[in-house]
Image (tube, rainbow, N blue to C red; front, side, top):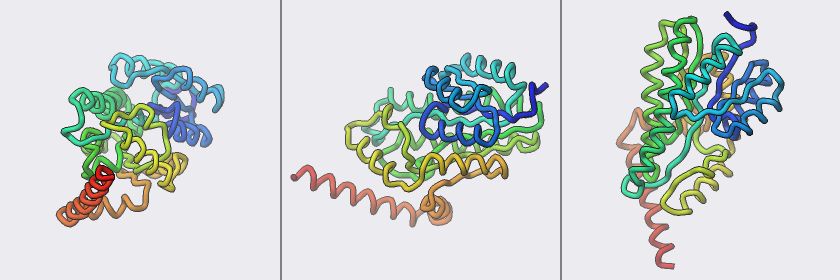
Length: 274
């Protein structure tokens, strides 16, 4: 039984960046928010700043026992969960050859398997209660096919594929599934980002600063998708036509990508000469 009629949302990685923006948006709309984050102190601080009814919990999304512990706490405090947002993630820059197997395993374990564990933990209870919504945070990188982010893009592509199949598996139970695919948004992602050299961090920081889309904008898209469920959540204007272009004209899209690759290669050669 629900402890009260107030709806509840669990957000992983909800203590900063995009996760915090989503937490604050849901709290402002009257939801009970559970923030699960590696940084327990910050998770509790953010939760407390939004009101006494919200929770901040320590959690490592790669550990099944952490998911079970958090699920038990959610059930105890809220009597169930209405929305799960699998947001926590990390980034790796580099080509296939540049990226170590250690970094491949790191990003797959967190960005893909962390989402798998979240879905495995809460899908059964949502199916049983006959309602719920799972939102998995992927990335524009998951379908862009752009070079230089091979491991990260592969992990996020896996999240998109997982979400697509899970959507069909849960539809008859009344459970919605969405996948969020933002491009660059100002967050703390580069603080933990792994890459072959500092230029990757510098480029990502520059793209985040110039994106024109804030974490609060993305949080609004997510909240509206809960009110009126949609599957593919694209938050940046240019990614909408890129998504369609790649689906409808894959070879033309590949030629576009290669033109960008050649420009980057030419700039790199010029810097080496200087």
